[in-house]
Length: 442
Image (cartoon, rainbow, N blue to C red):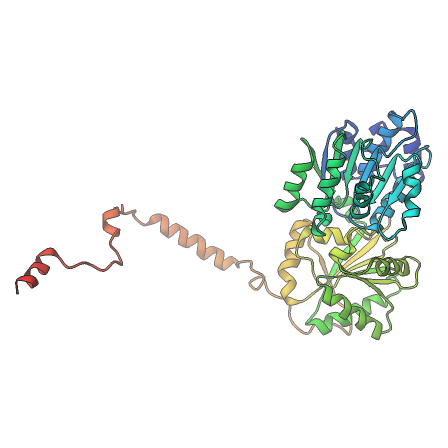
């Protein structure tokens, strides 16, 4: 059965009212796939990029469970959610509070960068849901300040990034401490690669595997096109032009490498474009300050790598610009999913050099729609677009020749080859016995 409205999921009236107040009536693809098995208590292995509603996909089932089976007296947390970063933990907790606004449920966070005294209430007061980062939570578990025995559901959000950050051992330690739990849910941007699959296999029992890419209807809210650039300098000029347009009210510029982040941020500052940046090895206080500058409007451009931007939720992003083309369709969808959210329209622009055209075609095939080309007057490319031959696709003439060659091969009579006819080919022949004997007699 295909779920088309939240009311079909038999959620509590308080949750439906909270969803309605946020303007949500139809579940996204990942929500429709994940919520029913999660409500039944099954383990869930979910794959969905940013912007597909995966946070609500795991929050709604656990909130419903807490309402269906209320505790008789106060106690330690029943739901534990692990995230890779403090920012994501705060966002998940805020989202949970919004959904639980009409209930009595208590939600708290445990993250790094916060003094111990600020977490004291988590240990002393009743908590239903705790959202935590692994490092600080593990510290409290080892100090016996956090009681895991009441945890009924363990949820891992952005699990692939936690593995990238080297948290696998910490997570397995925490999973061991919550061994009395009834359910585990793991969500990731992608399930590609053996590492994430092996990790999920160790933690989940007979999981329901769900995945979702943004639907065509969702993607239509995002205008997607690309500009051709002759070289890096041309690409920078195109970027400056695009960022100075009035409609670019809040933009995320994606690059591949950490080194490029600093170079590009400096170039934009020199051009009078205020910006902030995020890269993988930034101190937490600098990350928080950068995000705050963007969200409160002091700057309207963020330059970031894919890894650094994972796990942050920035509202009202008008544009996503791929300064460097992503290497996979999954990454492309993950990037553009940061705009066109909550029913709004958005714009995703890719800046493409000649060597990027194979990636451009690969992404077009992945999303099942070709990206449209645009030009800026005064910044038109001076080079021609690569031909079909240059992009790896054989011409019709070449395909015809291949077919003709295959037909000729079929027409040739097949000659049976015997092993004895071929076994000595290429080997040096040994002198015969008679010849060697004659030499001896001489």
